[in-house]
Amino acid sequence: ETGVTQTPRHLVMGMTNKKSLKCEQHLGHNAMYWYKQSAKKPLELMFVYNFKEQTENNSVPSRFSPECPNSSHLFLHLHTLQPEDSALYLCASSQPGTSETDTQYFGPGTRLTVL
Amino acid sequence: AQTVTQSQPEMSVQEAETVTLSCTYDTSESDYYLFWYKQPPSRQMILVIRQEAYKQQNATENRFSVNFQKAAKSFSLKISDSQLGDAAMYFCAYRTTNNDMRFGAGTRLTVKP
Image 1 (tube, each protein chain N blue to C red):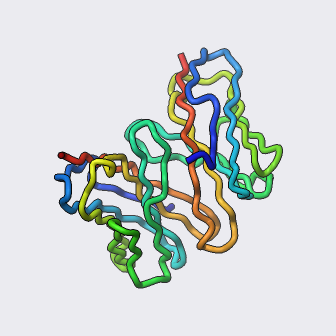
Image 2: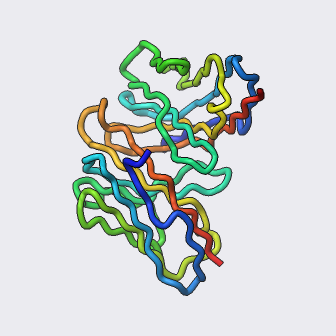
């Protein structure tokens, strides 16, 4: 359960604040992901990084800015968010390659509330 | 676009009984992977079971098994001998070989003692 960690676990911010979410994986994986989980909606894939390179951005607003300085760390920088951005933000990692290993492992998430 | 549908927002099962959670998906791909994830209340999402589309044999992990019907694009999860610890949100997910991942909206499973 501690293979992927996320901090903070809870965050309350105003619409004019700037904050960052952090994700760290201790599994030796080379791919990392950000998901948004809203109530009663499917998980939405936001960003994908493979070997520190962003390979997918699913039409995410620019107020969300990812950063992947190395294969073990992933950040999500937040600025001028909207109340509808309140959600659970999940980080995941995987080891791209064979089908047997490319299973995503999730962190506990950051519960974000935008006031 | 690939979509994943879980038609049961909530399910309930008596402890020690068996329950089946439904999942259907829509895709034009022939090679892909299917997953069931479990998310207990306030806890981490964990993988329950996975199935490669090219394998005809249904995957099994202890009390968890799937019924994979490729032609029908159906991927149901069966939980046998349900335990209180099985109570959670269960998400069905689909992934293509290029790492495009799609999740269903989830099924909340309650286990009654």
